[in-house]
Length: 189
Image (tube, rainbow, N blue to C red; front, side, top):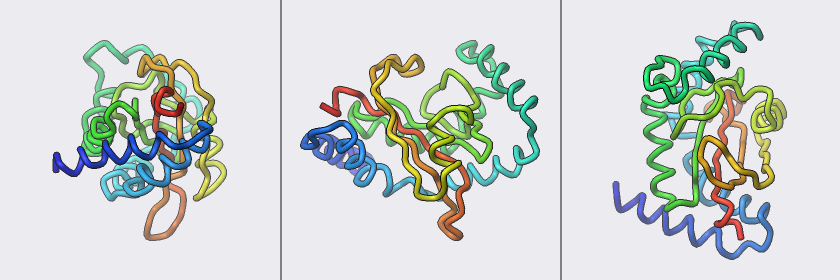
C-alpha cells in the first residue's frame, strides 16, 4: 500500500511539471491524479449517508451548524468537527494528500447541501454551499469542474488553487455532492 502511494506521489509530480498555464496544469492533475479515485466507494458511501441525514435541513439550520463549526474549529473538543475529520473517508483523503508529496494541500468532500462530509484537515467553515467550489460544480451538473484562482488559504496556510468537481453516484450518474482539492501554487508553475 505504501509503495502504491509513493508511486502516486511520483506520478503527481510528473503530471504537474510540463503544463504551461495553471489551468492546464490543474486539468492534467485532475484527469491523472484525482478522477481515478473520485468515485471511490468510501467517498460515495459517506456522501450518500450524510445526504440521508441532511436532506431536510433548512437555511437557518445550515447557518446554525456553520456558526457552530466556526466557533469550535481548533478547540479540540467538537463532535461536529471531529465527525468530519475522523471517519474512513477522511482517512482516505489524508492518504491521497500525503501521497502527493506536497502537491495537494487539502481535500474535502461535501454533501448535496454543501456541508462538509469528510476532510483531510479542518476547513475554516462547515458550509461550502455559498461558494464557487460548490455552486459551480454540484449546482451545474454531473461533469462540472471549477478551477479557482491562486489565493492564500487560511485553513492550509499556503498559496493554492482549488480544483472542485461534482461527485456522482457511479451506479446512476446522478450528482450527490462535490469535492475540492487544494493544489500548492508552486506546483502549478
